[in-house]
Length: 46
Image (cartoon, rainbow, N blue to C red; front, side, top):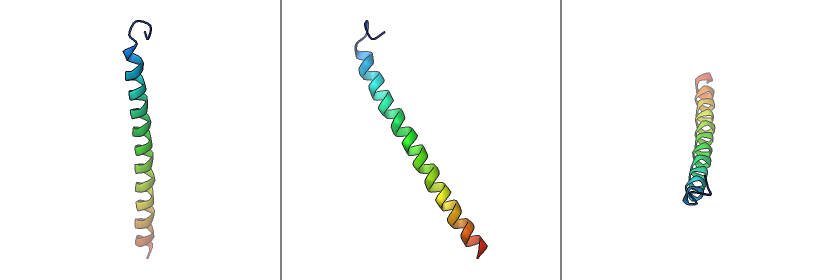
């Protein structure tokens, strides 16, 4: 596919970077929501 359409390699590299960023943001959101949940849980225990 890259032999016939060399511009696809650039498109794929951009999409790969975008997918890595989406995964990183998703993990960061999960960590943040988990931390908020733990904080709320500690506040409920008081």
